[in-house]
Length: 278
Image 1: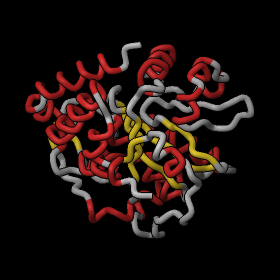
Image 2: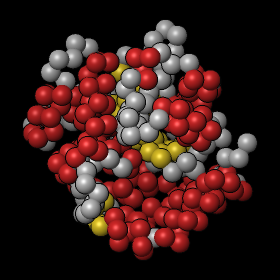
Image 3: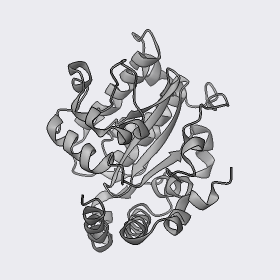
């Protein structure tokens, strides 16, 4: 299948009205905030979830995980330590989720920078969604799982999907969120969009993974009305540590980025608020 017309900036051409406007504003903001950096460079590869791409995006991976053993020894050590007590795929993925979720506890917020390799993200204590979603996918790749970054465009939030137990599973590593069905199977972004009520029907053990930084009720509301709204622009970004040489991992001051991009950021936020009014 030729997915090029549903990829990167060309996604704007298949959207219309306010959704096209918010996608273009998002693109401009990401370029302004991150420049020629991995966080923006990844956006050029993201694929829109729509009727034409749904089967392609939700097929079972037909190739082995690309990670080459010993290519990133620090990450291998982290994954080994974090998952040491895990007994199966589910426990390993959730152990990685907990680790990434709690990195924010290291952050002092005084001199925060955008960018950095996955090793940098761990060392500094990353907690913004662009980078923790990337880190979640990277660590899962080291652990042997396919993954991808999910951009909820109008909501301005990034999460991930990891493939294990024979299905794609929505994982929000910043907020510590995921969802299961009545059979205790993990649900994908698509699954939840097709039945949003499941957001409010989760067992206590699922809720227990939620980050205490926010109230669970707040994140339920955000996901129901924004991130996992059926009208949301969902974009799926492939990411592999084996593509290291195709990205730039330079640092950029968050403080400077906020100043430089204030106007376009405000435009993006306002357009996003209007796009999903029900």
